[in-house]
Image (cartoon, rainbow, N blue to C red; front, side, top):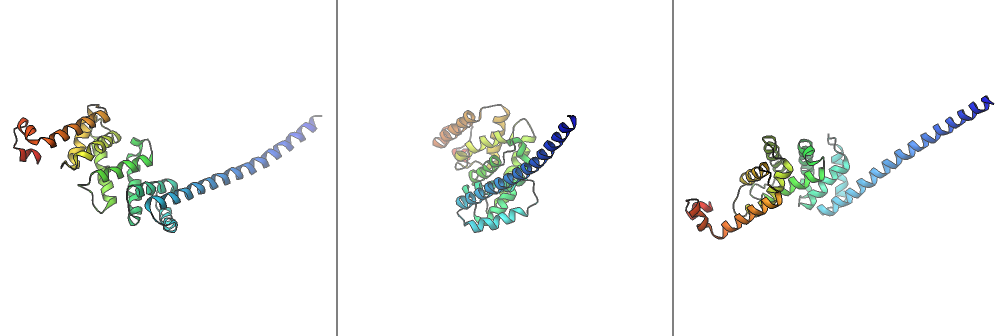
Amino acid sequence: NVGNYVSAFDGFVGVATRLGSVLGVTLGASAFIDANDKASDSVANVAKTANISIESVRKFQDQLKKRDTRTTLVDQLGIAEIGGQLGVAEQQLIGFTDAVDQVNVALGDEFGNNVEEVTRVTGGLRNVFTNIKTDNIPEDILHIANALNVLSADGNATSPVIAEFANRIGGVAVPLGASAQSIFGVSTVLNELNVNAERGASGVVRALTEMAKAPEKFAKVTNLSARDFKA
């Protein structure tokens, strides 16, 4: 009987609709719970790396919720977590997170939209460039990001590779008196020449080390006095 089939089909549709509604609510609730679990984990991680109390991180989290940004709360807490690993103090965490978030908007696409990588790179370079490091962490981060942005926009070099060169070279070059500008310049040139970051940086570091050992020898090659060469 056709009528029976129609009734049965209508009944099936009704059950499926109700089941779909229940599943939708369940899945929505699951996503909500999952997001909260991730946020809770992130809060604990920030407390650990920044060496502050959970209560302090909760207050910090409330500040993050008020920020006008498209970055998720979990990602913002992730920025703060890495900030703690880099030695950012509690009172500087909100400024650090805000600055890195701005950098992520400007350079994120070059770093594969990986906010953690943006954080590690910019925060790490600030620690490498001790000669330009100040007490104003957000400003330091933005200066470094601006340099990367300008250098990558002016040629074929890219921010991630420039940063990798600078990070590898800076650890040796900065203590020897090299400026952040000169390190960024060398890094950009090497990237433009398509030199492998690991090999290129190792070569520069070896050359700098040898120069530091025998400045008089290298001064003769450049027709400079040993004092001028060191300068």
